Image 1 (spheres, rainbow, N blue to C red):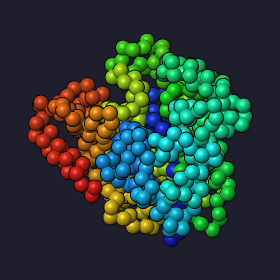
Image 2: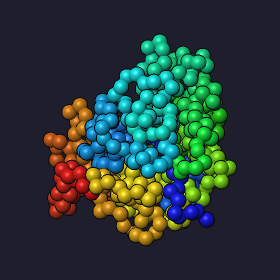
Image 3: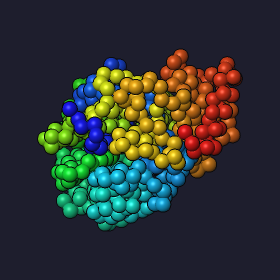
Length: 445
C-alpha cells in the first residue's frame, strides 16, 4: 500500500498535438494504446478535457503558471514565459521535491537559440535538473550550419543532422501528405531520444526525496514522420477520411492517419517503459501517473490541419490519471482544463495552491469524493490580428470571435460542430457570453 503521509512521486507525460479521440479507448478508431488503456482501468479517464489555448507556448505557460490563458503571461508563440512569474515546478522544488524534465517545454519558444546541453532556464523554470529541446520545426528552423538545441546537437554528433534536415525540408514541401518513413535510425528518432533522456535522468534521482518527472514528447505533432518500424506496423490498418475535407483522396487521408496513430502508439510504448522502470525502483504504489497533451490536432477535419482553431479536435486533449490515491475504473465527463493539473500536482504533494492560481485541483474527482469540478472551461487565441475565445460547459460551446457574430455549437446534437445554433438559442448565448466575459476579466477561478 502507498504511504499516504509521504509526498508521492509524480510521472507526467505530455504529448504535443494529440487529439482526444485517438486513443485505444475509442471503439470507433483502430488506435493501439495498451498502456494508456490500462491506466484508464486503474484510474480516471477524462472525456471533456480542454487546453487553455490551442497553441504550444500559451498552453504550456498556462499549465506552468496554473492560470487561464488570458492571465498566463504568454499570448502566442512569439512570447517567452516571464521568468519573474512563479511556476508549480518551483513550488514543488521548494517543498523538497526533486523536479526534473526532458523534451520540448516551449517556455522560451520565441528565443532563437537554446543551449546545446538543454540546461538553459531549467532552474529558472523551477526544475532541479533537465534537458530542454526544441520542437520538430523549431529545431530545424534554428539550424544555421550549427545546432542550437540539445536534440540537434545529438544528431550533429552522430553525423545525422544533415540527413534529418533534408528529410524535414522534403516534408515541409508536401506538408502532411508526405508519409514515408524517416531515414533516421530508431534511437535517433526525436521521441525515442526524448524518452531515453528521461529514463537516464530517472536513474539518477535521489532515494531520499520524492520526485516529479515531466516527459515532453514531440509527437504526434506534424509532420507525420515515423520510423521504418513504426510505419510497417500500420500498413494494413484502415481509417476513415477526415470530416468535411476535399483536399486529399481517401488513400492519402488513410496514410496520414496511419502515421499519426503510429506516433501515438510509439508514445504509449514509452509509457510502458517508464512504468517498468518505476516498478524496478519499487515506487509504483507511491507514484501518481498523468498523461495528456498540450492541445489537439485537426488532422484535416473541416479542411483544417494542426491546431489554433476552436473546433474540438484542436482544443480537446486526452487526459488519463492513475496511480497513487486515484480511484480505479472511472470515466469523468465533467469539463476540466489542462491548467488544472498545476493545482492537482500541488494538492497531491500536500501543498496549498496559492490564491493567485485559477487552477482547480482534480484530486476530489480522482479520489471519487465529488462528481463535479467546474461549470465551464475556457480557451482562446490572440495572434496576428486574430482574436477568439470560447466557453464550454460540456455540451454547449460558445465561440466569441472579435468582429463577428457569436457561434454556438451543441456537441450533443452536432458532435462535428457543423451547425451554428446561436440564432435558435439567444438566451443561452447571452448566459455563456456573460460567463466568458467574467472569466476573461478576472484571474480568480
